[in-house]
Length: 226
Image (tube, rainbow, N blue to C red; front, top):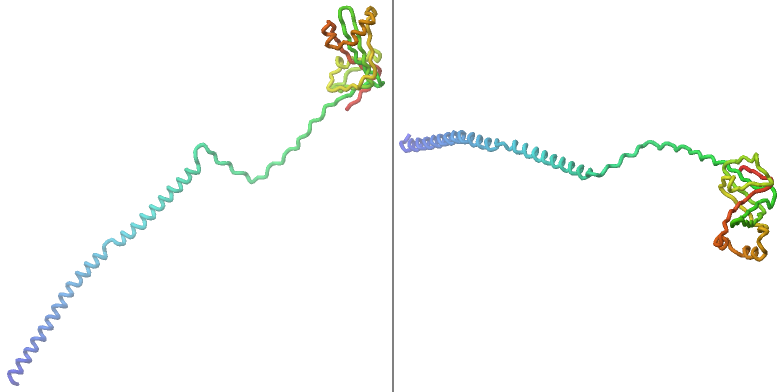
């Protein structure tokens, strides 16, 4: 084999050997550098991202809860202001039936009236010193209403009874007078009698005359419970 060809083959082998050595060196260097990079990347990735992400939502949640609790407390404070009472809840029970109140019994009353017509006498007696004048007005009928029945066991029909003195009257009624008579003392002259008859009650009182008035029932009486 010639010398030139041997030199070229040796040079080629040397080049290829260098290339292989360079490749091996680069592979080794890449193998050494790559785990360091990976560890760095892992270390960067291994920074407490998960911790931050875990803490942040819990903090937000707790903050929201506290805010919600504060808002509820504020609402309750606004609802229950001092000095105002909350109305009591109405019971679901039916109201008790009302008791039937008994009406009080009416008091008994009696009506007393004369049995015979024109037995009611209204007598006005005027007195002045020893002088007496009587004006008698006779009514057709009349009655009185009393709440207690009087004792009429000693009643004298001829004398009659003074109704406003003997009875405790609640109501009374007298009809119009049917006739009127006047009785004067005999010592008074006719002119004086006529003058006194023309005077009113006020004028008689101004002249010194005093009045006593009596209303009497005479004759048999009728007592009715009403």
